[in-house]
Length: 323
Ligand code: PBG
Ligand code: ZN
Image (cartoon, rainbow, N blue to C red; front, side):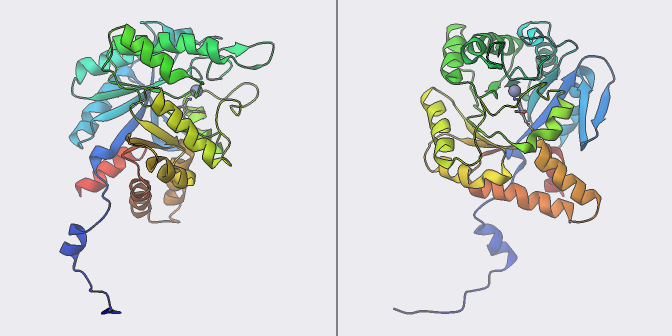
């Protein structure tokens, strides 16, 4: 057999023709945090460039990101009043329902994903109803109100529902509830493999959702478990999820690849708040070439098998891609 030990050097044109992975603006979903009021745009100390916004500001922001070619957002609501069951999220006049309606009215061409959970809406900061006796989340009681929350999102006009609480059996319950209410074509993106991670720290500042006692280890996954991580996602596929997700992203790219190789569903990664904060702070202190490291990081998600990237960097990346 002929063996040539020198590889042909490709010029730039040919390099882009044979490039295996590309990052485009169509890969991204941009997270936005909405609260009541008017003209409010408060920057989050731990996440420079990320804001809590009132609905009017969210609408303005959507106009801006559309100009960059970014047409997908995921909305998180921060209610005025929190209580033990997160009532604000179960009511048509709650912050999230109002925000969805307003955004869809102002921007019908915007793809609006909604995070379905209770931690932003409960006074104890957990992702569901608390079982007082055991001081843990009551899985099945939470399933019931999750279905209610899904219908609230659907009625308000959400384009995709993204349950993030990792309750057992939730995809099956939501799919049934949505079908029954006439939303058979409303897709579900499951936070199917969500680890109990320290990388969510800054998010809990923005969403004001740090648990008042305990942690989320009873319903989120052990970072040490690879087989369990794959099984969780495959279980959600069988329950009817349309898109699977791994969260956080960077420390779990092996898991992304492994799930990708075991499913035919599209996959998302959530490039979480702590990951964003790390790059942001390093960039602000001139320790790294920020734009370059951001793009390299996004590329790593695509290479690992992600079809969708949920990222606070989305707007910056869209700008970089325009250059
Ligand atoms: C709500 C939710 C969280 C994130 C997305 N949805 C917080 C959590 O699980 O504590 C984290 C996102 C981030 O850190 O950027 N369950
Ligand atoms: Zn939650």
